Image 1: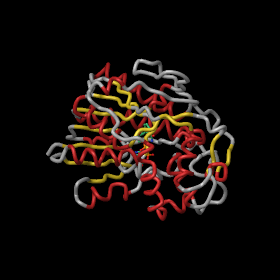
Image 2 (image 1 turned 120 degrees about the vertical axis):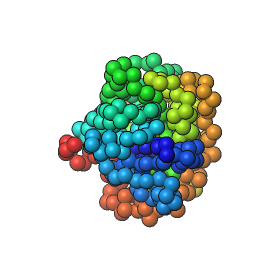
Image 3 (image 1 turned 30 degrees about the vertical axis):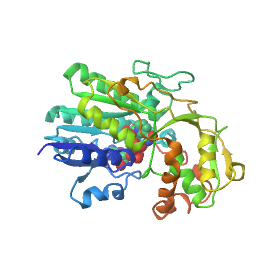
Image 4 (image 1 turned 90 degrees about the horizontal axis):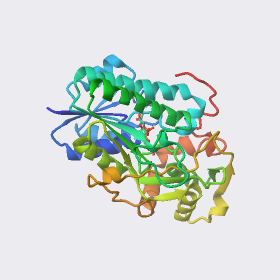
Length: 340
Ligand SMILES: NC(=O)c1ccc[n+]([C@@H]2O[C@H](COP(=O)([O-])OP(=O)(O)OC[C@H]3O[C@@H](n4cnc5c(N)ncnc54)[C@H](O)[C@@H]3O)[C@@H](O)[C@H]2O)c1
């Protein structure tokens, strides 16, 4: 039976990719390879695993022998596993290099040894660093500005080496901010939804004027499936939307859903050590393959917020029961450790 492996498939984006892949490749065996870090949850994929539609292999992408076993016989490997939260990367940056650079290298080497037919690597628009005006295309110089984006850029450098040295069948996707259900509440939308649901204030970094583009997880998953089928080997594809908002606008939209005036629920906190002002990417290349976002944040936000409210029990301990404010969540700044 043909086989597809999704690393990080029990996390936020990986789980959306897993459901989409299941629909689009019904005859394939689907294996989710995930370490089950704090950001993963078996409930993210329980509809797949309970029905026997996917198998979960719990393990570390840095474990070469296990990685070889998992990817053996795979037609496709989608590599989405990563440490993904910028705030954590300021506190424990070595873990980011271990998982995101060494882990990607390990998966690539395992795929090379096992003769995997196609790999889609999930990267990020943050590898470009700040884009104050205009939009970066795929040829724009990489200029990462924090340990997370540096580790993602490092992974892409390993890929470049494998493309040139071994002619490996790799396609890279650089996505902008993704929103949707099942996201760990360290990221802005689930965090703000849960904070207001718990009766807490919204903690906004700095002036709140930093801007981000938002793309629905379903649209991103569709783009990944398109790249599995039609992405050019060695190609890099920006995957982004036109939906651009300041952080303070996101706060305002969520406050509005709860029926609050923003000024009554907002609490400004000191900014990150460095916080990119804006990211922006030109997605013409994947749009030329026929992809375009089907969702808009303004249409989806109320439903997404409601999902977090409906699943409050799952996130209660992380957001509602902690002492202090939301900056305690997943910032990593309190850990001070550098244990990979
Ligand atoms: N969230 C976004 O807005 C966004 C935007 C662009 C790109 N990305 C990229 O998309 C991918 C997925 O991001 P996400 O937001 O779903 O992250 P996430 O933190 O929700 O999920 C990451 C998953 O990877 C797994 N994982 C972590 N370390 C692992 C290891 N050593 N071995 C095996 N599994 C491991 C975790 O258990 C988790 O299931 C990442 O590569 C990220 O860089 C995310």
